[in-house]
Length: 286
Length: 172
Image (cartoon, rainbow over all chains, first blue to last red; front, side, top):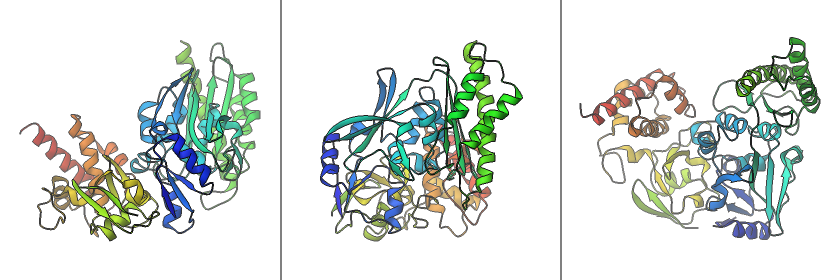
């Protein structure tokens, strides 16, 4: 097995071009588990931890450009206001040691349906930046997840950044697990209200073979919500929103939870996220 | 491959390293530093926690080659003074507090808890903040599993170490 240590994005892309079966490694929190347990023996490891650009973030044409290698710890510390849903999701990842190492790029690369950041990226309409020696391209998160652990990222491409739209309303993230730390989501949910476009975004984790949106629920709430005054939706609207979110899920029974429990939990998280958002929305409007 | 980095302030090198092996393996099996414990090998237990360029991390999840040129701090470095083995040096303040509070039973999780506690005290008392409260301690140690103690004595030990460090800092 080769170990490649590129120090620039260009070198990293050359390495991925030369070794399309090579596995990129940043925080190692997924890749090293597979190596330690002998589940994977890639021909090459491409270490991205010395590529400075990947660990940078900053404003970019009205959005935040977050390098794919920025750790969850830095997202929690720096992006609470700029990307609330993502920061809240990052806050729930594993433990301090793992948050010091794990990255959004790794979450996207592994594309586990239970990955903590996917619901927030879907709900907020984030964009994934992919790069290869052929150039860079942008793929909306909403088109990134293709099937179980399969994504739009091609074998000669690296995930270089995510572009996070400026929030124009409340953003929430909720996750169900057996304890607060070190939990793979039983199921998770993110909600974003976009005051300017009067649009609703959702994202569901561990609810289907890929992270998914609840589009019918989004359209329903966008229609029913009082965008002018932010008054509390009726009990019937809240309940219907929860039911529509649950109906977008195609969960399975596994050791973490049953499909029926996941659907129920999603409807509860959706109702709660909505009520937190309404309170916040009114504060923002006042 | 050959990997060279800094451990507890000393420059070290390891030869014939397989690129896919972990920093934990290099520390324990190639450099004779068995303080960091190998338990889960998947980041779940925190027993292999080390400082990596100043931040705590599970050394089982760092590929050996990623450590090239980096600064690593292990539990051996928490004892007072420098040197390779910790056996003959006096314990550091966090270690003393764990002994006094009875926070150690089988001891397997202890090295990781010590490093993670040292980091918590550095970021709180050491940064001019007050001593951490129960919630902060539980949050900081959430990634370190102990199957013996039930954690109560560990939390006592962290409070004890924090009080002493705060006291020492104010000159009392």
